[in-house]
Length: 102
Image (cartoon, rainbow, N blue to C red; front, top):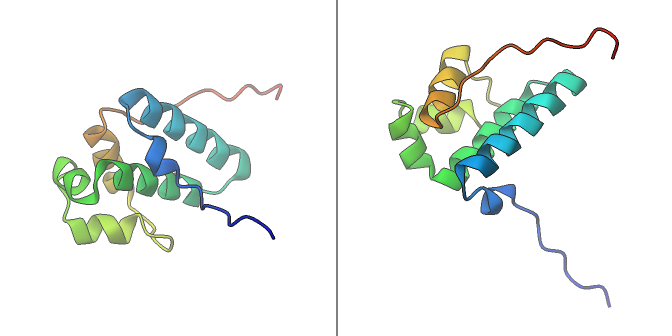
């Protein structure tokens, strides 16, 4: 008889600012490689759950409902929302030159 699988939840492991930063860096890189911005939305949603959605909404100066909606699976957050969430995490968006040889 097969053992039941436990669903992996990355939010359980985002227990330090460094872990959050590494997770988001990897997610942004994955999104760039795949050309899929939903990866970023999903990652920010995971971080918000790890931090607590209510606390994240307060820190980002957004309503909890707006944050849930923006970071939901079907969410399409505005850039201003992403900026607010990143600022609340003590992070910022910054351009990184892509190596043209890659």
